[in-house]
Length: 150
Length: 129
Image 1 (cartoon, helix red, strand yellow):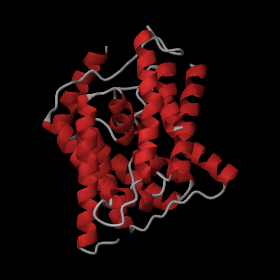
Image 2: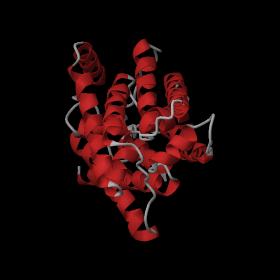
Image 3: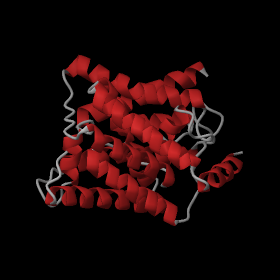
Image 4: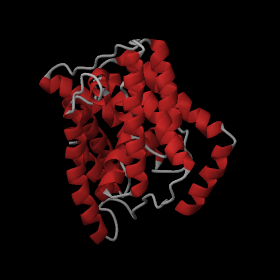
Protein backbone atom coordinates (compact mmCIF):
# COMPACT_ATOMS: atom_id res chain seq x y z
CA UNK A 1 0.00 0.00 0.00
CA UNK A 2 2.90 2.36 0.71
CA UNK A 3 4.17 1.91 -2.83
CA UNK A 4 0.67 2.53 -4.19
CA UNK A 5 0.30 5.60 -1.99
CA UNK A 6 3.60 7.06 -3.22
CA UNK A 7 2.70 6.32 -6.84
CA UNK A 8 -0.67 8.08 -6.48
CA UNK A 9 1.01 11.03 -4.75
CA UNK A 10 3.65 11.20 -7.51
CA UNK A 11 0.96 11.04 -10.22
CA UNK A 12 -1.03 13.78 -8.48
CA UNK A 13 2.03 16.02 -8.06
CA UNK A 14 3.09 15.50 -11.68
CA UNK A 15 -0.46 16.25 -12.80
CA UNK A 16 -0.59 19.40 -10.66
CA UNK A 17 2.82 20.51 -11.95
CA UNK A 18 1.61 19.93 -15.51
CA UNK A 19 -1.47 22.09 -14.91
CA UNK A 20 0.71 24.84 -13.41
CA UNK A 21 3.28 24.99 -16.24
CA UNK A 22 0.71 24.69 -19.04
CA UNK A 23 -1.49 27.63 -18.09
CA UNK A 24 -4.45 25.41 -17.21
CA UNK A 25 -4.24 26.70 -13.63
CA UNK A 26 -5.04 30.23 -14.82
CA UNK A 27 -8.84 30.70 -14.96
CA UNK A 28 -8.59 33.66 -17.35
CA UNK A 29 -6.39 31.66 -19.72
CA UNK A 30 -8.97 28.86 -19.72
CA UNK A 31 -11.76 31.34 -20.38
CA UNK A 32 -9.67 32.70 -23.24
CA UNK A 33 -9.48 29.18 -24.67
CA UNK A 34 -13.29 28.95 -24.48
CA UNK A 35 -13.73 32.46 -25.95
CA UNK A 36 -14.03 31.16 -29.51
CA UNK A 37 -16.06 34.18 -30.67
CA UNK A 38 -13.89 36.75 -28.95
CA UNK A 39 -10.17 36.95 -28.14
CA UNK A 40 -9.69 33.20 -28.69
CA UNK A 41 -6.49 31.74 -27.26
CA UNK A 42 -6.12 28.26 -28.78
CA UNK A 43 -2.89 27.30 -26.97
CA UNK A 44 -4.58 25.16 -24.32
CA UNK A 45 -5.81 22.83 -27.07
CA UNK A 46 -2.20 21.74 -27.42
CA UNK A 47 -2.02 20.98 -23.70
CA UNK A 48 -4.94 18.60 -23.99
CA UNK A 49 -3.62 17.21 -27.28
CA UNK A 50 -0.21 16.75 -25.69
CA UNK A 51 -1.70 14.85 -22.78
CA UNK A 52 -3.53 12.53 -25.16
CA UNK A 53 -0.30 11.20 -26.70
CA UNK A 54 1.25 9.47 -23.63
CA UNK A 55 -2.20 8.22 -22.69
CA UNK A 56 -2.93 6.78 -26.13
CA UNK A 57 0.35 4.85 -25.82
CA UNK A 58 -0.52 3.82 -22.25
CA UNK A 59 -3.85 2.37 -23.41
CA UNK A 60 -2.03 0.29 -26.04
CA UNK A 61 0.39 -1.01 -23.39
CA UNK A 62 -2.52 -1.64 -21.00
CA UNK A 63 -4.15 -4.02 -23.49
CA UNK A 64 -1.11 -6.29 -23.29
CA UNK A 65 -0.93 -6.27 -19.49
CA UNK A 66 -2.84 -8.71 -17.31
CA UNK A 67 -2.51 -6.52 -14.21
CA UNK A 68 -1.19 -3.05 -13.33
CA UNK A 69 2.41 -2.79 -12.08
CA UNK A 70 1.50 -1.96 -8.48
CA UNK A 71 -2.06 -3.20 -8.02
CA UNK A 72 -3.97 -6.46 -8.36
CA UNK A 73 -6.21 -5.57 -11.27
CA UNK A 74 -7.41 -2.87 -13.62
CA UNK A 75 -10.65 -1.19 -12.52
CA UNK A 76 -11.85 0.74 -15.54
CA UNK A 77 -15.19 2.20 -16.65
CA UNK A 78 -17.18 -0.19 -18.81
CA UNK A 79 -20.34 1.84 -19.36
CA UNK A 80 -21.13 2.34 -23.03
CA UNK A 81 -24.58 3.90 -23.23
CA UNK A 82 -25.08 7.54 -24.11
CA UNK A 83 -27.73 8.50 -21.58
CA UNK A 84 -29.29 11.89 -20.79
CA UNK A 85 -27.34 11.86 -17.53
CA UNK A 86 -23.98 11.94 -19.37
CA UNK A 87 -25.07 14.73 -21.71
CA UNK A 88 -26.88 16.76 -19.04
CA UNK A 89 -24.03 16.42 -16.57
CA UNK A 90 -21.44 17.41 -19.16
CA UNK A 91 -23.55 20.44 -20.14
CA UNK A 92 -23.91 21.64 -16.52
CA UNK A 93 -20.20 21.09 -15.96
CA UNK A 94 -19.38 23.05 -19.13
CA UNK A 95 -21.51 26.00 -18.01
CA UNK A 96 -19.68 26.10 -14.67
CA UNK A 97 -16.32 25.65 -16.41
CA UNK A 98 -17.01 28.59 -18.74
CA UNK A 99 -18.32 30.78 -15.92
CA UNK A 100 -15.25 30.51 -13.69
CA UNK A 101 -12.60 29.10 -16.04
CA UNK A 102 -12.05 26.26 -13.59
CA UNK A 103 -12.48 22.52 -13.79
CA UNK A 104 -11.74 20.21 -10.81
CA UNK A 105 -7.99 19.57 -11.35
CA UNK A 106 -6.84 23.19 -11.80
CA UNK A 107 -9.15 24.35 -8.98
CA UNK A 108 -7.54 21.93 -6.52
CA UNK A 109 -4.00 22.65 -7.79
CA UNK A 110 -4.71 26.39 -7.39
CA UNK A 111 -5.16 25.87 -3.63
CA UNK A 112 -1.36 26.27 -3.57
CA UNK A 113 -1.30 29.27 -5.91
CA UNK A 114 -4.35 31.41 -5.06
CA UNK A 115 -5.62 29.81 -1.83
CA UNK A 116 -8.72 31.82 -0.94
CA UNK A 117 -10.58 32.05 -4.29
CA UNK A 118 -9.58 28.46 -5.11
CA UNK A 119 -10.86 27.26 -1.72
CA UNK A 120 -14.19 29.01 -2.25
CA UNK A 121 -14.59 27.25 -5.59
CA UNK A 122 -13.43 23.85 -4.30
CA UNK A 123 -15.80 23.92 -1.30
CA UNK A 124 -18.71 24.87 -3.61
CA UNK A 125 -17.68 22.08 -6.00
CA UNK A 126 -17.69 19.50 -3.21
CA UNK A 127 -21.07 20.85 -2.10
CA UNK A 128 -22.37 20.36 -5.66
CA UNK A 129 -21.06 16.78 -5.61
CA UNK A 130 -22.78 16.19 -2.28
CA UNK A 131 -26.06 17.59 -3.61
CA UNK A 132 -25.85 15.11 -6.50
CA UNK A 133 -25.15 12.30 -4.08
CA UNK A 134 -28.12 13.21 -1.89
CA UNK A 135 -30.63 13.44 -4.76
CA UNK A 136 -33.13 10.55 -4.85
CA UNK A 137 -31.84 9.30 -8.21
CA UNK A 138 -28.22 9.14 -7.12
CA UNK A 139 -28.27 6.17 -4.69
CA UNK A 140 -29.62 3.77 -7.33
CA UNK A 141 -26.74 4.58 -9.61
CA UNK A 142 -24.21 4.30 -6.78
CA UNK A 143 -25.37 0.82 -5.84
CA UNK A 144 -25.45 -0.39 -9.46
CA UNK A 145 -21.89 0.84 -9.89
CA UNK A 146 -20.83 -0.89 -6.70
CA UNK A 147 -22.22 -4.23 -7.75
CA UNK A 148 -20.62 -3.91 -11.18
CA UNK A 149 -17.28 -3.25 -9.56
CA UNK A 150 -17.46 -6.29 -7.25
CA UNK B 1 3.28 15.83 -17.67
CA UNK B 2 -0.51 15.53 -17.39
CA UNK B 3 -0.48 12.62 -19.83
CA UNK B 4 2.43 10.89 -18.07
CA UNK B 5 0.72 11.35 -14.69
CA UNK B 6 -2.45 9.77 -16.10
CA UNK B 7 -0.37 6.93 -17.54
CA UNK B 8 1.18 6.28 -14.09
CA UNK B 9 -2.31 5.98 -12.62
CA UNK B 10 -3.42 3.62 -15.38
CA UNK B 11 -0.39 1.35 -15.73
CA UNK B 12 0.80 1.56 -12.13
CA UNK B 13 -2.45 1.49 -10.20
CA UNK B 14 -4.95 0.32 -12.81
CA UNK B 15 -7.13 3.37 -12.33
CA UNK B 16 -8.45 6.30 -14.36
CA UNK B 17 -6.87 9.64 -13.37
CA UNK B 18 -10.24 11.37 -13.26
CA UNK B 19 -9.93 14.31 -10.90
CA UNK B 20 -13.68 14.79 -10.23
CA UNK B 21 -14.15 11.13 -9.30
CA UNK B 22 -10.99 11.04 -7.18
CA UNK B 23 -11.96 14.30 -5.43
CA UNK B 24 -15.41 12.92 -4.60
CA UNK B 25 -13.81 9.72 -3.35
CA UNK B 26 -11.20 11.59 -1.28
CA UNK B 27 -13.88 13.77 0.30
CA UNK B 28 -15.98 10.73 1.17
CA UNK B 29 -18.79 11.75 -1.20
CA UNK B 30 -18.43 8.75 -3.52
CA UNK B 31 -18.76 5.34 -1.94
CA UNK B 32 -17.24 3.54 -4.92
CA UNK B 33 -14.06 4.11 -6.90
CA UNK B 34 -10.36 3.96 -6.08
CA UNK B 35 -9.21 3.05 -2.55
CA UNK B 36 -9.80 6.19 -0.53
CA UNK B 37 -6.22 6.57 0.65
CA UNK B 38 -5.00 6.55 -2.99
CA UNK B 39 -7.63 9.11 -4.01
CA UNK B 40 -6.48 11.34 -1.14
CA UNK B 41 -2.80 10.90 -2.16
CA UNK B 42 -3.53 11.92 -5.76
CA UNK B 43 -5.69 14.91 -4.77
CA UNK B 44 -3.16 16.17 -2.19
CA UNK B 45 -0.48 15.76 -4.86
CA UNK B 46 -2.16 18.32 -7.15
CA UNK B 47 -1.42 21.46 -5.05
CA UNK B 48 1.97 19.99 -4.06
CA UNK B 49 2.91 19.78 -7.75
CA UNK B 50 1.72 23.33 -8.39
CA UNK B 51 3.63 24.55 -5.31
CA UNK B 52 6.81 22.83 -6.52
CA UNK B 53 6.51 24.65 -9.85
CA UNK B 54 6.28 28.03 -8.08
CA UNK B 55 9.39 27.09 -6.07
CA UNK B 56 11.38 25.93 -9.11
CA UNK B 57 10.14 28.16 -11.94
CA UNK B 58 8.67 31.12 -10.06
CA UNK B 59 5.10 32.41 -9.69
CA UNK B 60 2.34 30.54 -11.52
CA UNK B 61 -0.24 32.80 -13.10
CA UNK B 62 -3.75 32.22 -11.75
CA UNK B 63 -5.99 35.20 -12.49
CA UNK B 64 -9.22 34.89 -10.52
CA UNK B 65 -11.32 37.79 -11.78
CA UNK B 66 -14.67 36.35 -10.76
CA UNK B 67 -16.26 37.37 -7.48
CA UNK B 68 -16.99 34.84 -4.74
CA UNK B 69 -20.69 34.59 -5.66
CA UNK B 70 -19.81 33.62 -9.23
CA UNK B 71 -17.15 31.19 -8.02
CA UNK B 72 -19.66 29.52 -5.69
CA UNK B 73 -22.29 29.23 -8.44
CA UNK B 74 -19.74 27.86 -10.91
CA UNK B 75 -18.32 25.47 -8.31
CA UNK B 76 -21.78 24.05 -7.57
CA UNK B 77 -22.38 23.48 -11.30
CA UNK B 78 -18.96 21.87 -11.81
CA UNK B 79 -19.38 19.59 -8.79
CA UNK B 80 -22.93 18.54 -9.63
CA UNK B 81 -22.29 18.25 -13.38
CA UNK B 82 -19.12 16.18 -13.13
CA UNK B 83 -20.82 13.64 -10.82
CA UNK B 84 -23.93 13.49 -13.00
CA UNK B 85 -21.86 13.16 -16.17
CA UNK B 86 -19.33 10.77 -14.54
CA UNK B 87 -16.23 12.83 -15.31
CA UNK B 88 -14.50 16.06 -16.15
CA UNK B 89 -11.69 17.33 -18.37
CA UNK B 90 -9.24 14.71 -17.08
CA UNK B 91 -11.44 11.61 -16.94
CA UNK B 92 -13.41 12.19 -20.15
CA UNK B 93 -11.14 14.66 -21.95
CA UNK B 94 -7.78 12.97 -21.44
CA UNK B 95 -8.30 9.38 -20.25
CA UNK B 96 -11.54 8.60 -22.08
CA UNK B 97 -10.75 10.31 -25.37
CA UNK B 98 -7.33 8.63 -25.60
CA UNK B 99 -9.14 5.31 -25.03
CA UNK B 100 -11.40 6.21 -27.97
CA UNK B 101 -14.46 6.03 -25.71
CA UNK B 102 -17.53 7.34 -27.54
CA UNK B 103 -19.12 8.35 -24.22
CA UNK B 104 -16.09 10.43 -23.33
CA UNK B 105 -15.87 11.95 -26.80
CA UNK B 106 -19.53 13.04 -26.61
CA UNK B 107 -19.11 14.34 -23.03
CA UNK B 108 -15.99 16.30 -24.01
CA UNK B 109 -17.70 17.87 -27.03
CA UNK B 110 -20.72 18.78 -24.88
CA UNK B 111 -18.74 20.41 -22.05
CA UNK B 112 -16.44 22.33 -24.39
CA UNK B 113 -19.45 23.59 -26.40
CA UNK B 114 -21.30 24.50 -23.17
CA UNK B 115 -18.19 26.35 -22.00
CA UNK B 116 -17.86 28.24 -25.30
CA UNK B 117 -21.56 29.24 -25.28
CA UNK B 118 -21.31 30.34 -21.62
CA UNK B 119 -18.26 32.55 -22.23
CA UNK B 120 -19.84 34.01 -25.37
CA UNK B 121 -23.12 34.80 -23.56
CA UNK B 122 -21.31 36.31 -20.56
CA UNK B 123 -19.25 38.50 -22.89
CA UNK B 124 -22.32 39.50 -24.91
CA UNK B 125 -24.15 40.50 -21.74
CA UNK B 126 -21.11 42.27 -20.37
CA UNK B 127 -20.89 39.97 -17.34
CA UNK B 128 -17.36 40.08 -16.00
CA UNK B 129 -17.79 39.22 -12.37
